[in-house]
Amino acid sequence: MSVKALKRQLLAAIAMVLVAAIALGSSTYAWFVSNNTVTATTTNISAQSNSAYLVIDNAAAGSTKTTSTSAATASETFSPDTKLYPAQWKNNFDSTGKKSGDEGFTSVVYQFESAYASAKDAATEKDGTRFAVGNPDTAAGKDYTLANTFYIGTGTYDGTFTNLKVTGVTVNNTTSSQLEDAMRVLVTCGSEWTVWSKAGIESGSHQTSSTADGIIKESGITKGTDATVKVYVYYDGADSKVFTTNLENLKDCGVTVTFEATPTEFK
Image (cartoon, rainbow, N blue to C red; front, side, top):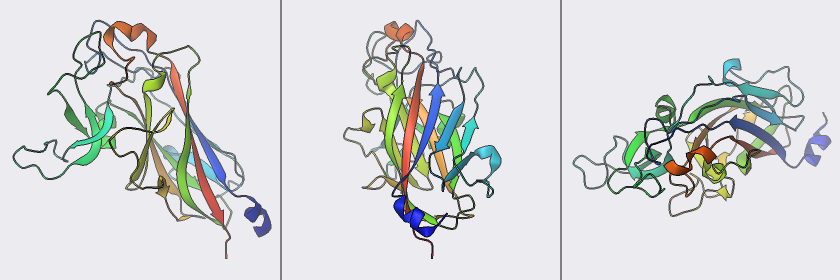
C-alpha cells in the first residue's frame, strides 16, 4: 500500500462487538446480592477493524499476526454460566479498600466498587454499605466484570498509528430490555482508561477518563509493536431500572464499542 494511500486514510476505526445476555435472579435486593447475576449466553466477544492497515487479535493469539494485511476479527468466548455482580468505576477508597478517615488511609484510587440497595423496589444505595472491589483484573476474578484482551497492530504495514481512543458506544438491545441504560464499558491500555455508556463518556461528578482528551494510547502502534487493549463489560447497579421487583425486564443487552486511531506517514 503506497504512502499516498495512507495519507488519504484519515482515521482507522475499530468496532468491537461485545454481546452479553443478562439473566438476573429474583427475590433479592437490587444493588448487590449473591443471586443478582449476569449470565453470558451468547458469549462471542468480537473486535473488527475496517481499515486495511490495522489488524486485531485476541488474547490467545498473544499478538497480532504479521501475515495479516486486511481487516481481521478476534473473538473471546465465556462459559454460559458466567455470573456478574453490579459495580461502578469510582474513587471512594484507597488501594487497600480504606476510605478517607480510616486509620492507615493513603489516597483514593479509581477501582471497581459495589454496594447494597436501600430496598427491593428501589435502586437507591443503602447508606454505609459501599465497599471497594479492586482493580479491573481483581474485579474480573471476583465476577464483577467480563474481561477481554485484544491486540491492535499493523500487520505487515510499516506505518505508525497514534492517538488510539474510544469514539462511540452503542447498546444492542433487541429484546426491549430495561438493562440498556445500565450497561457500562471500561477500556484500558496500559495505565490509561476511559468509561463509556450508550450516552457517551460517563457523566457525573467522578472522572470519566484518565486523560483530558480520552486518548488511551498516544503513540507506538507500529509493525511488531501492538497496543494491548483490555475491555471490561459490566452493569451499574445504581441505574434507576435495576431493582429487584423489575428483574424480569433486565436481560439480553450487547454493546458495540468503536475506536479510532490516526495514521502517520512512515519514514
